[in-house]
Amino acid sequence: MAERQGIQVVMCESTASVPPEILQTVQQHIEEMARALTQVDPQSPFCASLRESGLSVEVLGWKFGFTVEPDKIVLTEAAPVPPQVTWW
Image (cartoon, rainbow, N blue to C red):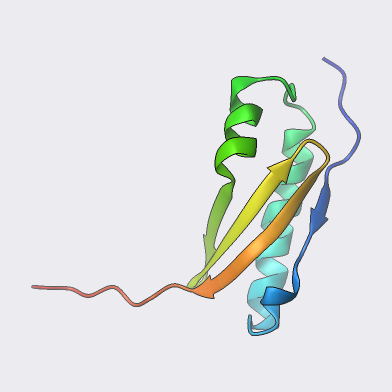
């Protein structure tokens, strides 16, 4: 299969409260994933699952949610991960 055109990464305005170094890291991760997705058949079950379920990534205490479309990955939410409670 030939490599597809690049997949655009779109960051939304909900990132205003995310520290810049974390935002830069998550953007690098998602851009790398977008490059890798150009190698995958867009009609594959994997791509269909990503389109249906979306993508969630945790980076340095923040959780980012993305929708995945054939030509772009769109950041739809960004929120700090609540601290884990240990019961021991």
